[in-house]
Length: 294
Image (tube, rainbow, N blue to C red; front, side, top):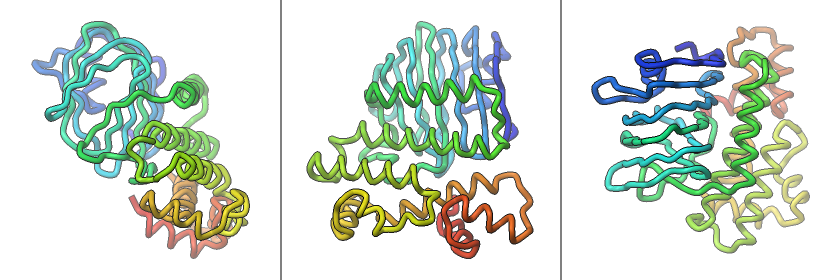
């Protein structure tokens, strides 16, 4: 499957529907998949957004690739999933977060509609696992609706994944995915008070939305949040990272997307990409890409 491309308005039945899903990590005992499938999908490197409606199906999801976070939103319908000793019922409003681990058994007796995001750009600390490799949770309505709207707009548009514009669409979807994971994980967070969690979310929002500004420094982040640098660093340390590490990761993700599929050799063009991603120089950009290679 080409890592760069689109498949919109897919309408398949029988064996063709089964084959399409098998290429995306599904397995069906005896080769029996859904009788009907309608789907849309856009891919750019390790980033995928898709939506699919399918009739009743019994099968499993294969383990996701290393360093990939997969988030599945249940839009409508009802299903039962099993992994290890866990069994959970899914219906509208629920989500499944995976970043590694064993296959998930899936059983749906009625049609079901799903939206999925797969990305290698969600930092590990947001793909929370604790004692299990998968997590089922009830996502916050406002964040779920925002993410579903972004995916719908992307799949309904004629934007191509090879363009710079799509690189920024991708970053926006990834940021909302991070926000949904953080917002749905407050009870499991290592951050202490609700005030700390809110401060952390504000800092993540600030860094994610302003990472391309080369003037965004540790001092600038702390000043914008009206707190001291030491307080800011302490909050991030409790979450297992630092504000500058997260900033570097976001800029590296932007640069990687701007460089995707290009043969860039001219220094002027490299300088342009570095500055558009928020880096002060090509050297700093290359160092960040090496450090955050995925």
